[in-house]
Image 1 (cartoon, rainbow, N blue to C red):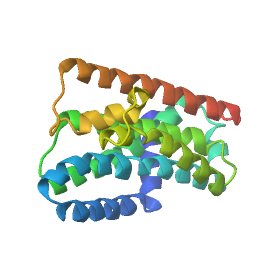
Image 2: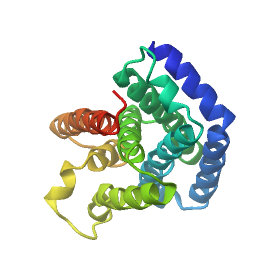
Image 3: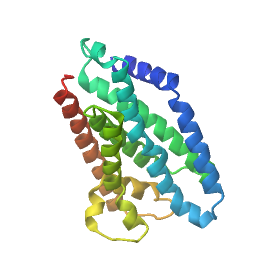
Length: 225
């Protein structure tokens, strides 16, 4: 069942121009990064990939849910035997894949290399962001309400950037999933120990569970069970 849902999601995303948006976003950031000196590029590229296009999925998934609701797509879906968890994972996986591919293209186009640890972190944070976006979007009655809540959530999630750029150092930032993803994304220029890698992976796995539960409860609260 989930594979059928994923096919529908891919078609829905293509029909509404999601791929075109991501293509332009990717090209824009490749151009910006290529203008930078190589040493600066190594530090900035992980941040750009974390924020855009990976974090764009946070807003894109919300726009998709609100668009489906306005078109009356959700109600017919949930009177079928489709399980709620399949619907949620389908949305998160397909949108995360879109953000992941876009992010990898940016990294290859700007740095000329791939980092398998960074790839793991990128896809994991893309799924987490998409799940957070679903949790907020399904509760939002209007686009403006969603954008306001999503912007506040994004500010909180991007606090680890203060530590990354040595502006503010606080251990509390390290518990956020974006801190773990950023650590993996920057591993090629800033290697870390096996223990640090395990901690980052455990952090992302824990937040995957938390983000899914938040999305699931949000849909249950609005009557989609």
